[in-house]
Image (cartoon, rainbow, N blue to C red; front, side, top):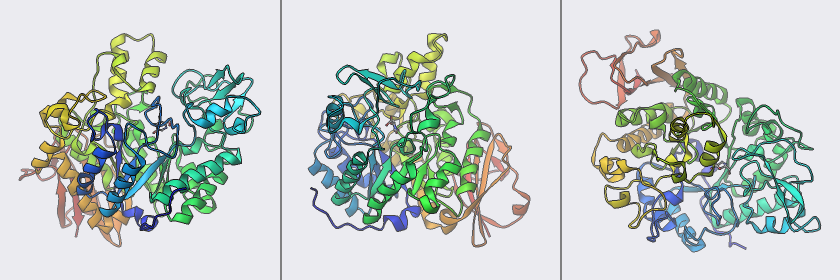
Length: 555
Ligand code: NOJ
């Protein structure tokens, strides 16, 4: 039993004003010299995170795991991965986070465990085992595909049955219909909350209740064919409200990851009698250049991006709070997708403004704030991520090798998992020895924290300015949102309005100079320019440079 520790529980009251920073520890900072990021390295860099203006850290899984899916396959929920440190070191990190006035959110992955988890090892022993019903076993599989590889069922010789795995076969799905499994989850939550963590980011949480009898999916839709039967399942609200009660006892927050979630279904988790989550990660805006990342790529469409942004802004206004993000460990780097690597500083700063000033809590993913970009490895075997490798081998097999590799370059999750670039020293200052994964070579061309610190106009310092501005303003925090010129292929423009105050955010997504017109109601009105990613006088004030962004306050 973990000793219950007294901590300040103000997160529930305040999270709407927070900026979150996501750490994927393996690639953040190596503190013990083995080439793998860890909790020692994180401890040393907490001051840096704080210096950005961050209020809360979300830690991707740090539990023991065979790393078939880099931590999202957990083999023990109550310990720390030996690569990352010990429980004692974790407590030090937690205490330091709190001393710095920040909060810490853990990743809770309970749709599935690792096949190396004790429960699964027991469960596969046979039907009489006490853990027999912890997982989903069938004599005959249905037709569901796995999101990560082939079919969603694997035959287990020992048990003589098939088990379900929506992700890869080393990630068997837990049977949440079993009350004992739910008790286990609640115990795990209490274990970390007693230690003092401030809440959870809950992995694929809208998948945990499967439709009774597991009906077949639509056979002609690859990979996601079973989704209608496991997304937002029949008991999801019941199960989540049980978890919610635990959070209520500790005044902490639950943020759900909701793959493929719609506005309507998100609102069912965030509002009303079933309210169980404080915020939810949606995905619509991550598909402005693809459909399910690796599966189908298409040219970036600003209109698609704006439609997705605005849909969520309008729908949640006054009812719930958005999570705002452009990157995490599951997506390639945003400059390489929605911006321009050639105009890295310009597009990286504009992209920061375009999402941070919306209504909601901004999340920044490690390295995003220094404008890290995608990697392009020559051989698929040089990539580490299981989903990239499997998707390479299952989709578009008739295309040329070059085209298939190009898809991986554009879409692999590995681009966000390269070591954090701290300096221009060897291995980007991430480690003193060869890191576990390739370092993006642009660390020696200025894409690193130390160089960005020195330049007042860097992406890093622009993030700081955006965060400061957002936090200093009730308009940018609480104001409602209205988009202008939704049909423009070059400009994203929105206002935030609060108690009669109007602020306007203008972002050019163009590589060229663009003449911008203001909406009629703002023409000739006095204003103050509060933020811009370009310096200096302009001949024509409303000509926007490539990827220019401005924030105006109208007087
Ligand atoms: C979502 C996580 O963010 C991702 O990294 C993981 O592979 C899947 N869920 C499965 O846990």
